[in-house]
Image (tube, rainbow, N blue to C red; front, side, top):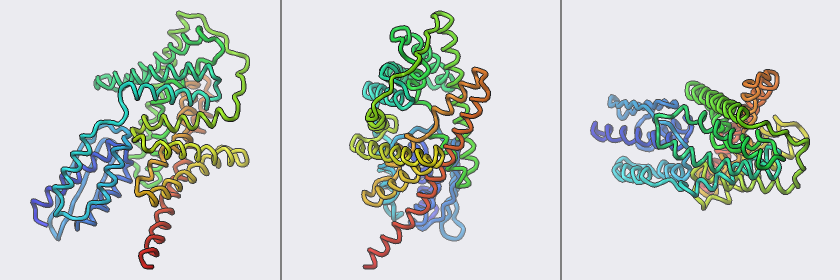
Amino acid sequence: MNEQTLARLALFLRDLGQALHVSGAPAHDLETAMKAIGQRLGARVEGFAVLTFLALTVVAGGNSRRVELLRLPPYDYNMARLIELDALCREISSVDDLECYIERLAAIMRQPAPWSGWRFVGMGFLLSGSVALLLRGGWVEMLCGGLLGMFFVAGYLQFARIPRLGPAVPVILCALAAMGAQGLAHLWPQQVPFISAVAGIVLLLPGFMLTVAMSELATQNYLAGTGRLTGAFVLLFLMGAGLAIGTQISLAWLPAVPLPESVAALPAWAIWAAIAALGISLLAVLQAPWSAVHVSVGACLLAWAVYSLVNAKMGNVVGAFAGALAVASAGHLYQYLSKRPAALVQIPGLITLVPGSMGFRGVHALIQQDSAAGISLITDMVITGAVLAVGLLLADNILPLVFERRGASDRAV
């Protein structure tokens, strides 16, 4: 490999690493992909990725070396793009086809997001309405939470056009959601405004970010893990502050609405319908193609079924671990059978179990000076996030070995 080819390869791997990052790939998956591609192309690639920085060292032959440093932009999940990038990573096999790979990467990054505009806003109603039911709200909370979710998604899309607002966006949107929840409580009094407000802002709750951070820490990616974990807590406090500000403003202008003495119990099928609706709405949140709807819904139902069965016998912590292990294992089985990324199953299933709303309620309790409840809820959030990461890591380390050995046995036969 000559110096010119090495330089082109290093630039391509840098651009591919950035594409994986902005599409939502965790740091350890990104580094593993870079190393595997380098081995197939006859080069040694050493990668170092954190939330805002990517360093790649590409070594070919004895002395030829190329170093690429890049400041990474903010990331978001785009499963449709990740599917294409995963296929590209698996198909890279020869330096001779490097120009073809470069053109294909550029074409992937030019593709528009599958969900945008009114379609994304409509999914906001489904997302927040289903979460309201999972938070033990009633039909009124489902309706109000869904309406708030639609406006929240619409506001998020509009504010995304003003990058300079950045950190202020969660505070602004959560304050508006809190005021909206108090206003809707005057129109439909038989509800708990806090449930409607939390359901309405669920799009930004960083529960899955917490789980990814825990998995990065467990795989010794300490800088990436601590950075993501810090970001999750900062976002929680910003959202909690916005909710508190909005609630106090609305209570200063409107009289407080008495809370209902009890919420009518929902039929058992309502929770399962909410889980299925959550699976559908996550297509928009994750920017996944509509063709994956059955996978997303099935993953959510599987995670909730395993969690519910184990939780009834052994408690929340073991239930969360079992649910994560089951859905992560199902993801690897899906990848083995369909050759599509395991994340299509794993991410929707894990989002069903993540403790984002638990952490948000803990932060809100701290802001309301209820320290005991706040610390208890945040501790539960961290423990739940940790056991989810353990279940995910066990499946990620065991299942690929099982399928590799099975594939080797099939080829030998």
